[in-house]
Amino acid sequence: MGTSRTATAARSPEPASRRRGPVLERAILEAALDQLGTVGWKGLTMEGVAAGAQTGKAAVYRRWPSKVDLVVDALRAGLPTLDASSDLGSVREDLFQLCRRVREAMFSTPGIALRTVLHECDSVAAERLHGLIVSGLIEPATELFGEVVRRGIRRGDVRADALGDLVFDVVPAMMMYRTKVCASEWTDADIAAMIDQVMVPLLRPAKH
Image 1 (tube, rainbow, N blue to C red):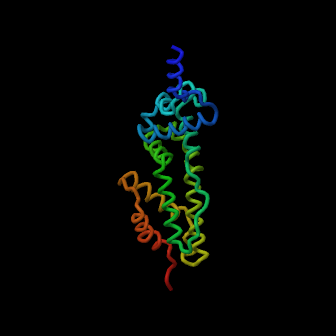
Image 2: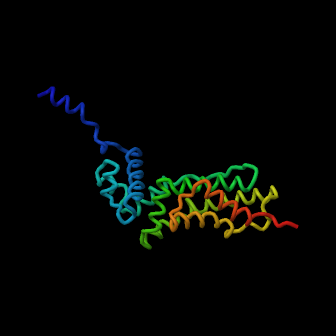
Image 3: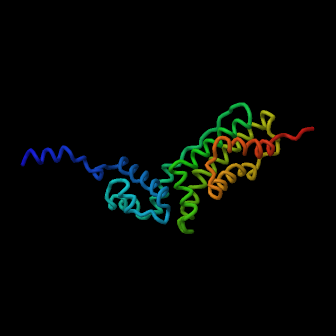
């Protein structure tokens, strides 16, 4: 009998629920993002997140009293950092690389989760998430597009009056619209076409 218990113990992995601290919290946050991407905001439950993280639901509720609290922290921890744009010598190439980064962010697990939340959540949850979305995504992306345009002005390949929120909103607005409404996955060719057909003509200095 002693040998049998030993063999059983050797075959049984340590329960995931024994994880503690940051390791367990990270697993729960990742499970929340995965759940948002698969079942959506309306289908997400604390029990489902707990199952995905291989822990008990009490461990989730101890840290986050509601799913809004959980999703806010999951998005805050998971959203990619947009901290600098590359200087590749022309506004066209700078925009191309920046758009590829935005595409990666949009189709990452946190990006898919964020789009799901924006589409499905109620007004109360949307209000809680608004500040996070602005500070974690909209403002950094706008600043990077502004950085590319300002650099282009200094180089002379962008018109001097191209600075403005509406100009900076063109690429994010198009990418979000085509992704949500047209189910576009934004291949490199799609990004190049948008830049060549829309952005470069919009930004190009007037000929005298």
